[in-house]
Length: 530
Figure 1 (cartoon, rainbow, N blue to C red):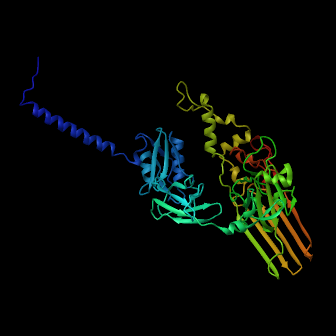
Figure 2: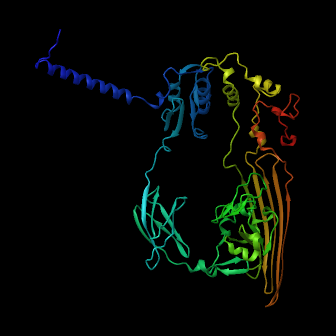
């Protein structure tokens, strides 16, 4: 049987098809745009709550991690100011619980790989469009300054002008300020003010060329130098509460690399212009008041220093020989030069230290999950190994019986908090006297530094004393003494820093209250815990 559409019937089918297509598109749009952040989880996912309680949002995510396969990733202190959530005993859909946590709050939940949820604030997710500024850097005569530095003020964002003095830089704010500098020219601040093209003219700086610096043979003006010499700006960091002089120099001089310290009283590593040898010595030669200094740099009191100059190129070897192959650091201490009167100066500071980035040990639940996930052939049921084995006992993998008993009694130890100081203090006190007479000058100082280590018992204490005398007997005869005395106390404990990663169920004390000498099978320094 054949069906034939006539001209009178086809228009009606055409209208019907259009109606069906429009209806389908409307339903599809309603479905696509109907998803919200609260529908990010499966509709069948439910959370069981044992009792009525008021908990933080972080504790809510602990429930998700324990009862679902979802993983939440967010900044550690993202919810520190958020109000707590009221949970009622029973079972609740996971989406509804998320909706209650983030109601009327500007957060974005991003689902990755169907199991990982990344949470960010709406403010952090906003990407600001960069603003590009181009221009030319010229001198007073209109000649291009090739290699001029253009840096966005307050940031590390910068570029270098090309051979013709042209540059192009992308900045975050169209009202930013650019710092333009070039050797022998005064640094200039240029306000962008929404302009995309800038023509910048720099003026020569005679003051920088007349500055006197210390070199191997004595002192010279910068305009007379042919080698590479840099002088540190002592005034910019003289109020910084640093134990070591070279900690204050971090990032202040191009080419001078100062390493981080990991313990109280540590000496930072030093190098000039990077690594110069695979296995040889990297440290530059240090010259203190004209004498080669072989001691520890931590013994030098930063408050007694007047200037620091760095000789970076090979010309330093002409004075000090091959021992200057890694560069030379010239340190000059303070003297009594100044007004003809006695001047007393007292400085005192108390500061708090904290690690820049701290890697903490896992929680008790994370420690248990490590055993379960690491022993998947026994902790889960075959053949697909997706369902947990109800008869699996992960405590059989614990190292000691004390850990098994601690787990059964829900007794765990936060070793990181137990072995570290939450707010280690550092005290600096310095008293100095200077006098400048017609024929003599005197500088006398005494200082005390007390640094509490990040780890318990890891402390450092130092006493400094300095006496600089200079007497002028004739135009051709000057006699002086430059001396200092340092007493450093490194009597703190030699601590194994890995102890803070002991298992949470490794008990710190035995049942009788005495310290456990081998928590988790490790030997513990008894005096670390009071």
